[in-house]
Length: 68
Image (cartoon, rainbow, N blue to C red):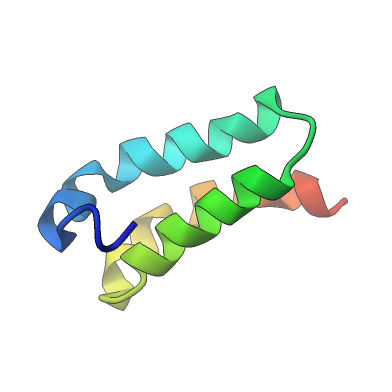
């Protein structure tokens, strides 16, 4: 993911990408592939740590039902 999209473009599109990936949890019964894709997005966006801070709550709300 980080090699396909530049950091500036990823920063611009991060809210859309995260909401799209997290909405896939509702559509697919098998969550492994969605989690793997989300992991790739999070790894690509975690380099400047403050880039992900505004979106942490949304990601945690999507992941929490997968745990319980």
